[in-house]
View (cartoon, rainbow, N blue to C red):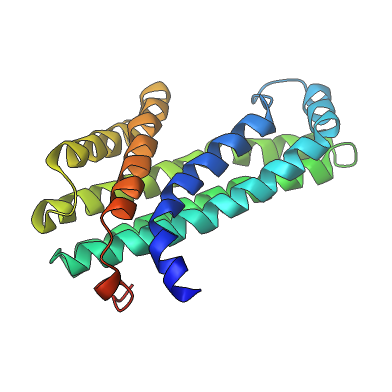
Length: 212
């Protein structure tokens, strides 16, 4: 069983993107800051089941992201990449995963509070949920930036894929919301392609012993 996990672990990147996108879609179009408190409460009451499902999907996505980042870091080290950069990349993925966990927790809190909590409390939690995405963006920026720079030395990834990841990392930290959100497109695409590439070119004889 361990060998099967090692073989298919790279595909955790594809699984991560899939669970993340499905979770976001299932969660629906959440209210914005400034919307009437009654509308906010109604949304979370009406979408109770959907948002609970979203919470579960996001938790699974967290696990998949950490597993993928661990496998990528091991491969970067194996191919002769900088251990410091590989570790930094994994740390960035942990930050992004933590941000996704906060997203799931706040969604769950909003569902539980809707209909019972005061308008002020509900709006306060909504404000936290609306701004926490920066943690996810910054984590992904660190992850992709460090991994791509490391890959330049290790030759683990083709140069065009490195360029795609670097573009995503830069866009993610641009202090303009629309541009930062666009940065998720090349970043998630980078994760999917990297995931498939690592799966198609495994190093089973040595990956199992790599340190994370």
